[in-house]
Each structure stands twice: as structure tokens, then as C-alpha cells.
Length: 344
Image (cartoon, rainbow, N blue to C red):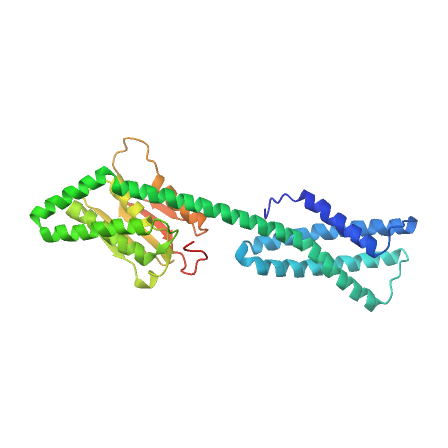
């Protein structure tokens, strides 16, 4: 609505109302030749005033978009529209002098013009702001619904990935082998496995979680993978505690780790290494070595597309995916802990 706004009806209705009010206020309804000329001048300058004010409103809107900047946008649009209107009215009054229409004193004329500029400017700004505010509310509701849908889909995907028979079979096999070989490791494996499921259940309704919660969860998840693959899988999590209060969509790291394990070949001789850190731009970076498996079919790309979609709906910086010959990297924006509506 900011640049391709469909406001033809508004551009017809508003000038008509302004012209009617101005004609009444100047008692120009009983038109003769002289009055008709003045009326034509009035129509011309009001239409000109409205169109120029419309351009100003749209420029200010592009500079201060969204609900968060509503107050600044309204104040700026109103001030500029009033000043513009004052200039146009003063120009109209000067033109009227050419036709012998002599207003009272210059001071009274200026005061009258300034007072008129307020109500005319307000009548131009008000409908645009009301419609824009309504549009923003509708868009906010739509984006909230889309985000909830994306979150639900992500949650279902994650739960399916973890609770599917293949995952349970591998986990239980690992646990059974450890119970015989190393009861201590079996106990640690069971604790971490329960932590993984607990996180999945507790975070299935939240749009965002803290980086600390996500890292605590991914430590448990990585422990399961490390126990299962042993020397074939290594990892390093290097995130300064100063970033723990930031926010991110839950289960994002799990999806990226799953993708790394799913799409790469690795063994004790050529291990898969995963690194989680924060870069100089205060963004979370997840990097894994690239040893691609031969694709037997088209990749779904579901995991990455879901992450990108959720960040877009949260109106955050773009998620970057960088692939080189030996490395695959995903850069995730960290969201401020004061993000509006973070846990809604």
C-alpha cells in the first residue's frame, strides 16, 4: 500500500469534500461570473494541494513504515502537509488579488490562511493514516497466522523426525549396546535422550526461545549423535554467554544438524565436523564439513525453507546459506530479547 496504493476513490472523494467545505465557508454557492472564476481557482488549488500532500504522505510512509513508527510518521506527515497547505493557500490568495479580490489586512489574511491549513492538512492526512493503520493490522494478523502455521509445520516435522521408528530403532540399539558395554555411558545417553524429548514437548507452542535454551537442547542432541557415531562425528559449540539472552525460533539448530547428518557421508577416517559460533556481526553461524552423499532423488529442502520462512515472517535480517567445495554454512540473525510479541 506504500508504493502501489489503490486510492483512486480517495483522490476523488477527499478533494470533493474539501472543495465543498471551502465553497460553503467562502459563501460561493451563488455563482456569478466573478464567483465562478474564484470557484475554478479554488478547485484548482485544492486538487493541487491534495496531490502534492499525497506525494509527501507516501514519501514519509516509505521513510517511517510499520506500526512501530506510527507516531513519528503521523507527526512528520501532518507538519509537512500543513506547511504545504499554507504555501498553497497563500499562493491562491495572491492569485485572487490579481482578480480584484482584496482580503482584509495582510496580518489577518496570514492568520486565516494558517488556520485553514490546519484543518485542510488534517483532512488530507487522516484518511491515509487510518487506511494504512488498518492495512498494517490486517497484514500483522496474516503474518501471525503464517508464522503460527510455519511453527506448527516445523514442530510436526521435528517431532516426526525424532519419533519416527528409524530414529527410535537407532537410539534404542545404541542404548542396548551401551547397557552391556558401558552402563555409565548408557545412563548418560538416557539422560540426554530424555532432555531432547522434554525440550521438544515444552517448546511446541513458542514462536521464539532464548539462545541459551536452544544451545542446552542442541548439546543433548549432539551428545546422542556423538555417542552413536563416535569418532565419525565431532562438534564444537563456541557461543559467548553474552549472546544467551538473544532469541531465535526453537528447533532451528536441530534442523541444521539433522541436515548435516542426513546429506553427508562420514566415517572414523573422514569425520563430519560441526561448528556453532557467533560472527562479528552478532549472527549465529552453523558450519559443517561438506562430504555430500550421492542423491537418489530430489532433495526436499524442507528444513532450510522452513527456517528462512520463519525468519522472514519475524521481519528479521535474511538467513544466509553459503556453500563452498568443502564447507556448508548457515548464518542466522540473532533476535533482540526486547523483540515485540516474542512469545505471543
